[in-house]
Length: 280
Image 1 (cartoon, helix red, strand yellow):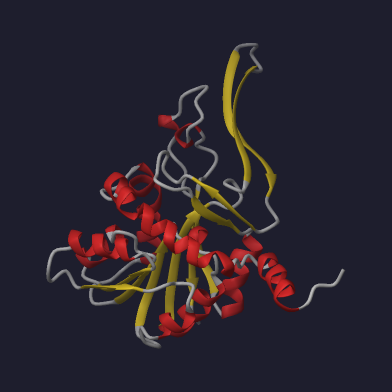
Image 2 (cartoon, one colour):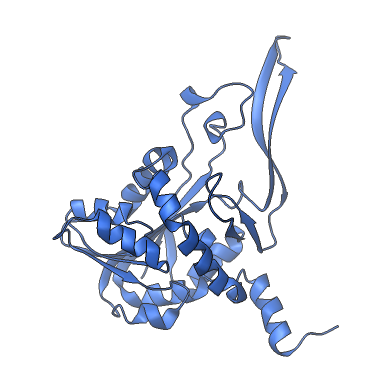
């Protein structure tokens, strides 16, 4: 049966990885979880310190005096790192409670302008200033956004020609909506018992929204918005960006232990994808 009107629009949006009907609930959930999250990882964890931040800094290459937009800044950890490198930062998040935490954590005169802005709202982003920014960054947030097309279109206008947008995200190929970690033992070529840990993926191509825990025990499960690479990068390419840098950080093999199911134990599987987009 052919769909028309609002139902047809919703079906098309979901096929493109857009879930606008979940936006209000998504903001409410993040306001519920914000302070709890900041209390636990606001000072950094292994994912941030070992995987995400080094790769993002390499691809972003922030320079003193540059104007940088931090999209979905959370409690402002990366914004403060950019300011310490001499950048001028506008940091936005849709959660009022995250922005309150950001301001409390930031010393006066740090050169960071924190604002409550919904990154799925193109008009709200446009107010930040067309052609104002040298660079933009977003850390581990696109998978939390019901819509990314408005953000990509707005960023293309907000950045100066030659500007870059760097984002990190949970790796859609290895943290898909239907993924299972496994550990198994087997006999190696020498006949000795060996162990391996890995991922089983049963669904990847279809965009999907699901709920899960980013940190075990958080007050409320959050939405994850899975988009395969063709959808994720397609939104950027449609906006006019080109991709000119990518990293897939994984934990070093020295920390792996047989039979465990942590990301530390899968040094050949990257849990994070970091991409650099260029505005021609």
